[in-house]
Image 1 (cartoon, helix red, strand yellow):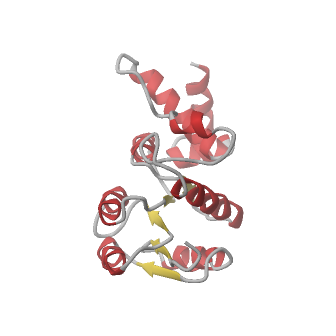
Image 2 (cartoon, rainbow, N blue to C red):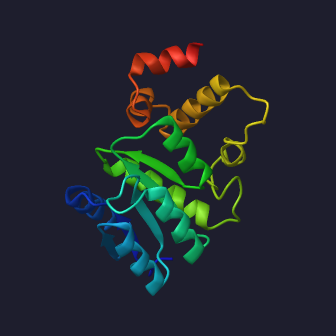
Image 3 (tube, rainbow, N blue to C red):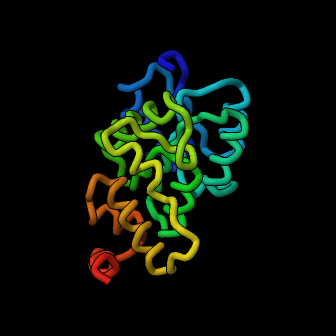
Length: 192
């Protein structure tokens, strides 16, 4: 894994540059793609250590790319990066088995945490939709999106919000930004 490059997929050149700066401290080589087509070409050339992927790409949805990338490299660890996102996007991302979800603007600590989660998830058998985080909450985390069929939509929404808050280390303000809702709306949702 040490010799494999890391793939960053984002149409925003500034985000690509910033992520490259942060990840060069973690891996030897970083490859960048501005869209899904470029990313697929890179993935077809050989394995990569992991992929940071924007949720909204110019040529198609980031989660669609994640699905195709997993067909090429089934155990590929992925972190979604986004400046905007809805509850539905967040639920879909975690169900697709992403290791982490980073909200722009990107900071070094979030990238390092995501990278560690990606490494931990790729080093063990896939559980809970492909996620696997090697920490004390690994089992809880792997089962986090296992929701019974008879659960109400309100309960599912609340569960998804709690999952985002957990993924963002308890940062409710960041969770509200990631979900595209006002912080007060997030608190009302949690209190309901």
